Length: 363
Length: 96
Figure 1: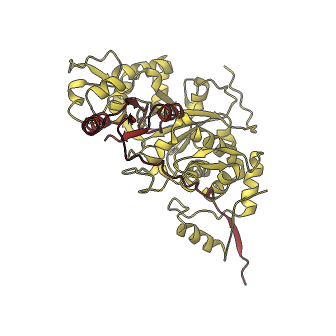
Figure 2 (figure 1 turned 90 degrees about the horizontal axis):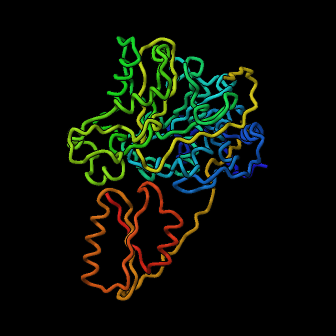
Figure 3 (figure 1 turned 180 degrees about the vertical axis):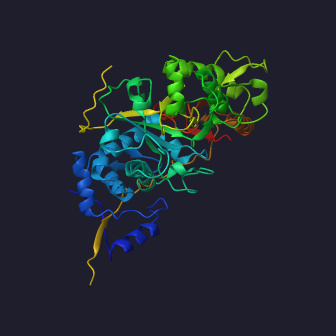
């Protein structure tokens, strides 16, 4: 039994305009959430409409299955997308993700959703060409559903409670699948303790993707040196505030690296060792706060008196999250810096997904 | 006449609970004061300056200093409970 307040409007277009007037959109027209559509969404999850998934900041309002379903309809989700949306909501409201900070920060950070497992094929979630761009309903609407929940349930309003100086386009939607088939390594969810058969979402507070171009390098070290240099930049929040960051290797880059026998751990170790900048350089800019930065964010072995000390962009190799995604052609990869160590960690949640895809990837 | 449409409200529809501020003391001598550093850069300097100014004017029974783990997150429930137990008033600063 749905308990949301009913609003009567003249028709479809009037509903679209009303939602704009009430400030209930992300700036794009929404699908009017009729009772029938919301009911179908709730049924698809097989959960009680009144079940509270969690509290969404900054209002700390209750996100029930019903309210998430209303926003998922508005986003354009199909009912079979809804179990994924619920898993995303569970990750977002987990205290360890610190959605409160992500909602309110002056930083650009927005939740990036990375999807793994059989659900990718079942729901046609794009992991291939243009996967961070437009064109796939699942990518567009699952990410959008989260943002609408953040706006309408959580009260994250730009300039009011959402103090982001710039935002970035990922605040409309930011959702990709990992291209597990093109990866020489275990997928992200297996690395994080799940089984190949499981379908998961991983939520990470992310900047927009930074393209890293390396066409000439035909060796792993060349590609990863280019990536390392692109990560350790003066204006990168990770440089001063540690935290996690994501590297997305294209299938072409991943194949070159994998062919030489590098493991994912080797990749992370290399990047940790090479993605560094001398203390003397970064003291002059960015967010260097002297004693505070040294004590709180940087590894203990950094000698504050040595301007030649090489500061790593993250505190440890494990804080670099590596996935493979993108189309089969193009020798680019992506660096996606994070928000820094602001009490947020990438969260992985299992999707309640039976699925129909029978691919078995036992290793 | 075109059929009307019924749509559902996407907000949480919760009535906010209005909290009243705790009563303020006019007399601060003999009180226990706490300084809560929100942990943003230089909040400690703001609070240290305030502490000096307060101590010029008042005699506190006790001065408690605490610091949040992250400026992007609220103080933990344990920390708030501790402050409520150990202090009569809490001053917090937002660094920047």
